[in-house]
Amino acid sequence: MPPPHAAIEVVGFDADDTLWHSEIYYQSAQSQLEEIVGRYVDVQDARVRERLLDTERVNVRLFGYGAKGMTLSMIESAIAMTDARITSADIHRIVEIGKAVLQHPVELLPGVREAVEAVTARHRVVLITKGDLFHQERKVAQSGLADLFQRIEIVSEKDERSYARLLEEFGVPAQSFAMVGNSVKSDILPVLALGGYGVHVPYHVIWGLEVVEYESTHPRMAAVEKACQIPEALERLASA
Amino acid sequence: MPPPHAAIEVVGFDADDTLWHSEIYYQSAQSQLEEIVGRYVDVQDARVRERLLDTERVNVRLFGYGAKGMTLSMIESAIAMTDARITSADIHRIVEIGKAVLQHPVELLPGVREAVEAVTARHRVVLITKGDLFHQERKVAQSGLADLFQRIEIVSEKDERSYARLLEEFGVPAQSFAMVGNSVKSDILPVLALGGYGVHVPYHVIWGLEVVEYESTHPRMAAVEKACQIPEALERLASA
Image (cartoon, rainbow over all chains, first blue to last red; front, top):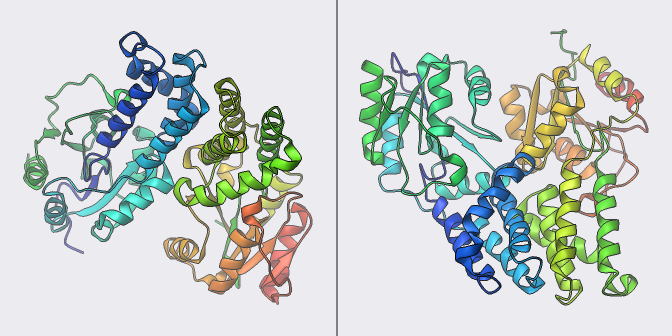
């Protein structure tokens, strides 16, 4: 194990849309849902994506995150949007769309392996992801990156409470922890609130329920455009 | 923390159908599915439960365990069993049945709290459950038992590999670990195979995919009928 860096000892990486593509598969599923619902109603009037998001916003409190919950929400909202005129053959197609999301290939984002490897040279590195346990484990295994992380933590929610519990388990104070991820809401703000650091690496699309208003000038937060800029951003934050 | 017992240092408890009722809610969901499918076909001929189990056996490799996967499998098999004649209104009923399973009350089995408390007096006690992360966390929280466990581990599969990983994290050899649970397949056999102990507490119903053939005369395995017999069974195993 490399000697821990003075200021930032442990670095956490988010997984979906930080290490590998994910949201594009969910967005593609929603396009396919729009096409199916469009056989019954005018898709403009139906506002398929908005109504699906409304359904998901309610159901996430019961389903948690992940593709199985999205599939059930797609089925539920398709039935509502078509006034129950949708055929069960089309509902079966929605189930198949959900299964395809669960089997999407794990494609690393450009420069990710090199960036994580560079960070491991100076910090202890862990992976912290939320969502469906089974699906996330599968993606971690398929990514080929599992060996780079000292720990792999899959949590049901990424809020202050979850991060506080994890940091206690890691035995590291928040002041020595940085989180790297694409979601300001889930990866950055809760860690900043605890006193830690955040490196925001936006992905080109984001799920509606992850959208948040935020102040981008926090002194312990950095934003970069590409994975290859992560190691330098961490060192800048650590030495500030 | 109490001094660890000489022979058995850590005791793991399963959760569903070991600490609280669970399978009865899944069985009730299946009865309701039978009733819905029975509006379209002869339920005897359709063998609803067998065909659902066949669908689940295939889908569990993609969905993992838990109520959301069961709900998707119920939808898929209901469409197949009715040759896609089922209405989307009835499919919506199936979604609601699945949601009810996710919200079932957490009712402790008789004597469970006292049994776990008695075990904590002589051993380090952890909870090890598999299935849906979000739903399991919710049930643990609602059970009121969370404080009795030093660690709460939710895994995607309870096999030798998972237990070996957990024991390494606990820092305990298998020879000093006992698992208490209702499923011989998931709670007992993998732990025995690693060299640990098992206390089997059967529940009156078990999910088809948990049924397994086994030899009940293993020297490191005990079987008890009620939770109140667990502490004594552990002491017998530990001193054998």
